[in-house]
Image (cartoon, rainbow, N blue to C red; front, side):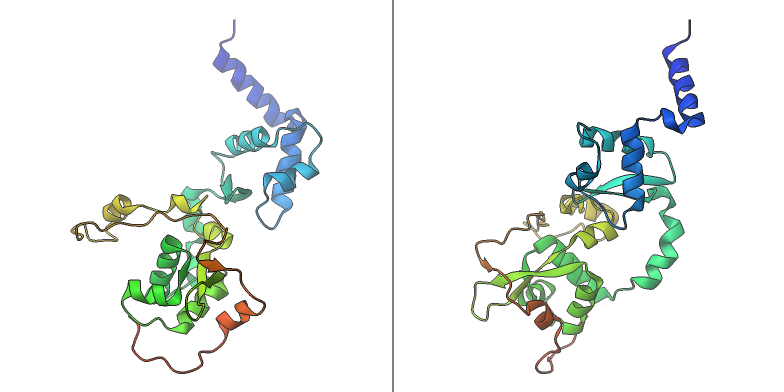
Length: 238
């Protein structure tokens, strides 16, 4: 009598020979995800699938099917897409480096926005301890990794900034909670292990809703964020 392992192997070989042996919903789901130019959420996928299909179960099955392949099915901000397997990411290193080269100041600013959002430009400068060049902020806006969220309910009503789904996608994060915490940062050497007492890394939030101290954006706010500075700024940027 054949063992369970032998039976599973025979079933797998049969499916490999006959693609039609795979559940139809997996083939449809696979086709939709491959054809899409952007990640899709379960609701959008469900509209294109036959009635009665358990989208969550089908996505998990498809994810398992691709787990050991050159491309993996991954979830980013509750949306699904195919991506190059993590251990093969070196194949894309050169292209990524050439098209996304950020200055140290831009990287620092991006990290502050990711961890402290919603945050204003003045708050970023206070955290960094130096004047922030508007050009650096413009570069980040143009990448699509950050966006104006709203306006702070303080004098001058400054814009608040947060990260986007494109940021999660670029850094292969399912959610902002996947960003490294203080102990992980210490382990990688990115922060000094001899930090002042009480030092902490904030827990970033994915909540897109405006906070109590934020007003909604107004027409033209994005254009204003990208407009040239009204007057030269004093001080330098590290």
